[in-house]
Image (cartoon, rainbow, N blue to C red; front, side, top):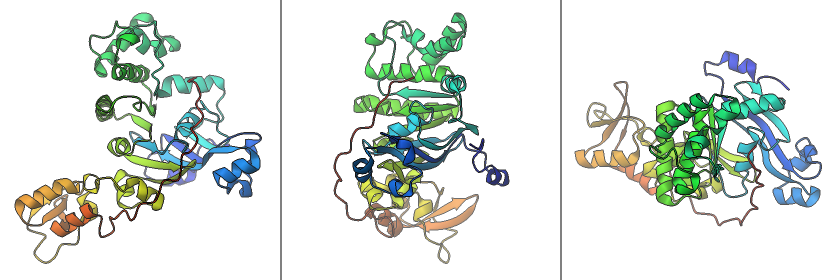
Length: 378
């Protein structure tokens, strides 16, 4: 297997190489699952047909994507869509069936056990939904556990753990046991434990889905704050669209093991790739996601020099307030140049879903899908 993906193309590009690169990744559960990806007829079957004919389940089907340095890349979908299987494949907690998987240009599928342990311990830390805290250890010792495995001395690792206690908002709780903490506090310990090893990539597998809504929102804020402060690359798995829109720089929406659309939150809400995505986002308040850069029209005669100015990434909800206050149109301005105009008509069209922003008529649900196979952390 090649050590790099599309290396010739990258050499010609000015963009930095992605931190994570996935190409044509498959994970097939079942007897002789390895034969499915290479068989064009079988690979083209629907999930139900594949299971009926072969006894196999394709949890991840021919998935390709890149994760850029410092990006929050969200993978979302309903239960059984393959998202949790996919994130576990990234560090081979679940072994992929076929494909190309690289982190920093290194072939993850070709790693021996020693290099794979090093990857999991130091470069790609995972935060799980079930916390996985050691009940007999204090908060500090739980946070320091990964550093202990790495062989760091006790004094040094406890100092590092104490820093993480402060970072995730657990000041004064370092000597408590997990049973003495709330669910949100326990998840902060799990987050601190992952951060303590200073990984290049943080992988979150639905970490907040068991928390009540208020604590969940607090933890989302914590992730946003940490990302803003550190710029760490993150892959975040969720079934919650509002969480995906709130956290993600880009979102990959999965269905039946495949990625049906990948793009920014604005791209997915404003331009759904198909009816399935359109149905997914139909209840999203578009004015909170779509920017004036997408909603603007060309400036008419005399308009470029008048009206309040807005940055292209200003969301429509904010622009509505600005236009209402001024009673006139607003200019979309970047680097001192007027790119276009938004007025009451453009803004209300976005809110109403008109002029290309509509989500169309909803489609019915397509039934429950089987839960994804879970594995214990390695």
